[in-house]
Image (cartoon, rainbow, N blue to C red; front, side, top):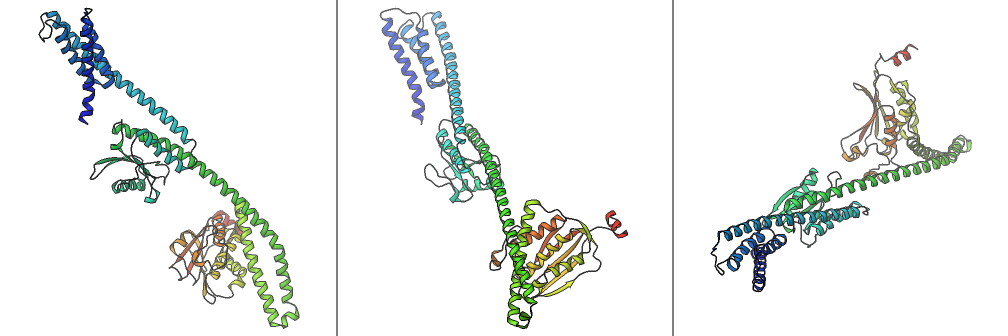
Length: 505
């Protein structure tokens, strides 16, 4: 390293030596009075090519050479004339100033050229980002650019080692660097972090690729491996590249989200149209089957034959269950296509419970039903049909997921601002995750995959209750310990104008 740094000074002294030989040869034939002016040339050349130190070395060496070879007495460092002393000192002053100015010009030119090159590279990088189709393409494009532009080792670090990008030299990422990158990603820290890797003492610059877009990973740049730039310049360069990549990533993510939303919307429309069309087509034949079963069950030949009567009843029960599932699909299509528009009226919650039990009478026949209804429950201002269907879905759910012969409890109670209608069973219960998923469309628990169903029941119930200003809640002590699912509807006070008018009527 020391020999390399001394080479420019040696080269500048060699320039002075060559200039001296040339002047000695020329002055032996033609007298020249502007020797000092000629010596300015190697000074300027050394300063512009190699910097201030070689330029100053050439200035002092040329002054010594001029004194020795061209000022009387020749071949001596002594000067006879005071004018020669002044001339030589003026030359030395001019040479030093010229050397300084030439070195600054070289530095400015190098900086300008480097900045022009960086701008051109960034422009090319920006154009390249326009061709990236995925976020992964953008990240690897940024990594390739840092490798080619900065000539430094860098690597993309993901949430796990398997998510890491390829490293140029194939070596593993230091564990301390990985931990720091994971800390930045976990906290989504927008700024860069610089650490020193022991025991090698290598400095690393670490920054999240795109703080605005989670999950894109971080980039780690080994500062000591870069050539031609200082640490501050490298950090600024990395920041500029990653900012450019972050803008493209945000645009790509927004585009992907928009495309996904469009696909989901079109899928929902097609699915609802299919479900609605098929359901309507199925209900006609199903109504004929139910009607035929009703007629057959009243025929004397069927009534007198126990096996035939039981068979007709079984067909009727299965047809009723199928009709219920088709109504659920129609309700789902109606909710998605048109929304729920409740027709509000003042209603006694007990009447809602009675209507839901009558609606599900056949399904509830295999269980013991216990009613725990309070008499002081106030009226609620809801769409009676929607709430009856919602409560019916809770009863259907309790029958489906609890063994035959167990107890299903239907209760009501008053809160400070709500009326709660609850359905409790002794069935499969709920896990913590299942409670969080409660009310989501088409959600089916893997534990109950053997039980038939579409996963629409609780979603329909939740939607109908929400349309009436209420909410759905679930309680369970755990799997196989039963569950209680409740409808909470907002209450009204007796001084509500609408209620007062209704009671006066």
